[in-house]
Image (cartoon, rainbow, N blue to C red; front, top):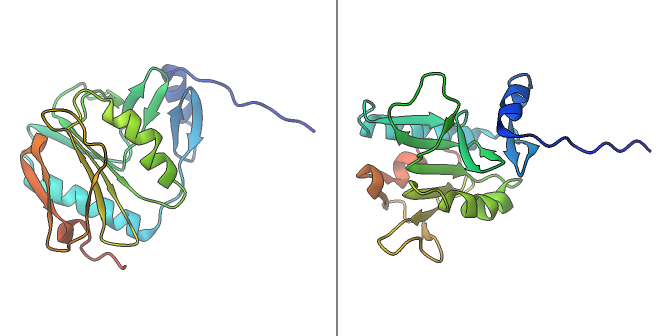
Length: 186
């Protein structure tokens, strides 16, 4: 039996390696982890969020990115949130965000444990992050972590009311469940 262990990467080596891969990967604890393919509902929710955020934010002040822009979450970890908002600026050839204000993951069955586990711990440790959202793709349901004056809540707020809005204080805006789930087949 030929068992090969996966090589460990530092961030620089990871970015050089991943640039030549056909699939998408994250760097987790120095190891490359392949990202799953997404379903249509996942894509629609991500697109709806990009459109809603892009129409509500001053894009001269904020950068809104979908899935392909890296967030450094630790010494040897790089994640790719489905949606990320950061202050505008930074070098055009930059590959990572270091000051994300909003991160959103669209829940997939294969990523649920990570989205509610490691990513919660990694994202909520980011000093600039104000809100982390996890959006279900099989129901109108969003889990919301918002940093308050005393820090992060013990548990996320769960929003399921179709008429509800999600307040994102760091961006001074609200998103409705209607906007997030527009044309999503549930």
